[in-house]
Amino acid sequence: MAWNEPGGGKDPWGSNGQGGGPPDLDEALKKIREKFGRFGGGSSGSSPGTTGGGFKLLPIVLVVLVVLWALAGIYQVDEKERAVVLRFGKFHSTVTPGLHWNPPLVDSVTVVRVTEERQYQNDARDLMLTQDENIVDLQLVVQYNIADPKAFVLNVKDPEISLRHATNSALRHVVGSTKLDAVISSGREQVGIEVKDRVQTYLNNYETGINVVKVNIQDAKPPNQVKPAYDDVIKAREDQERVISEAQSYANGIIPEARGLAQRIIEEAAGYKSRVVAEAEGEAARFESLLSEYQQAPEVTRQRLYLDSMQSVMSSSTKVMVGVKDGNNIFYLPLDKAAEAAPGGTGTPSQRLTPAQISTIADEIVNRLRTQSSGTQRKELR
Image (cartoon, rainbow, N blue to C red; front, top):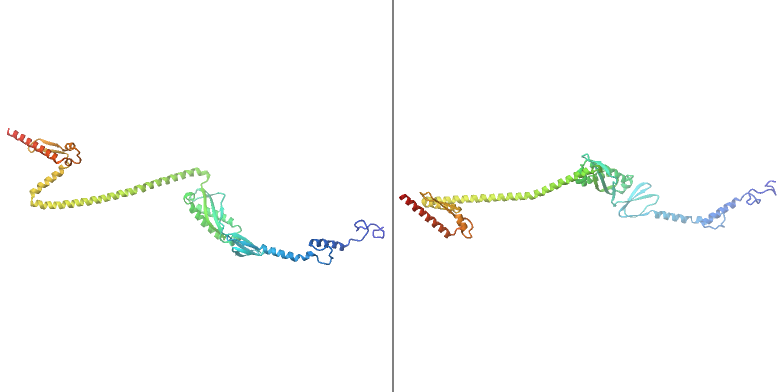
């Protein structure tokens, strides 16, 4: 018997093997609506033609989303920062410090710390060739900040990579035009200044918005393969500087002394000149006065000059030889011995003898002369 005949077989659309017709689509839709109604908070018994409670909450959800979207656009820029605003990918403005709002998904904001001093250090040492064809190993640090946030964000894809390339290029250019001694010791600071100026020129040409503050050459030395030989060179240079310093110190000590001695000799010569000129003028004046006296009394003046001359000669003589006229005997007067015998005698013999001693010596000389003269006369009479 067919399944669709009365009293026939089982209904294939039945759920429990019971007879029946096809499934009810309205009942299936009703069950679906009930499920969505419970999810939206509506009543499960609402009719299919009525609107569920979930559709009533839609405006509230939209308002909440708008508020959240508006709050997401609020941001603050500190004093050390500047913000670059792009609207639909195109530059719009540069924002100064303060509280700001930009519509999310419409504007993109990039905050840049402009006053912060950053550093770039070449961790990997670079071997470079100097002007005198020597190899030097250098390590430096570049201190920089952001001068133009717009250029820093928009003009170059990665400004710090540009800084690294510019630094390497400038360093090789400056080291290649400088000798090894200047790079390693005396001219290291000047090398840093030249590298800074050249790096800044490169960055300005690239319009990176970076301002280079300072370039410090932290370490500069020859390669390890030639370091012992270079250490010997450094030691020799230090010895040279030490010897030069010692020589300079000696010169600083001896030159003023020599100048003082020369000045003293000049002053002594000037004094000697003045003294000799004054003595000569005095002798000339005395001679003129003696000439006038001699013209008036020649014999007396001649005798006086003779006595003065003898006194001048004999006052400094320690031994006196006295000859007798027309005789062969000579008397020897040891004045130096007589002066030494005098108690407490100092000075020349004429100064050390007292008047009494001089008188005694004179009397003895006279007596001996008389005795000698008498003996001579007796010999002649015989």
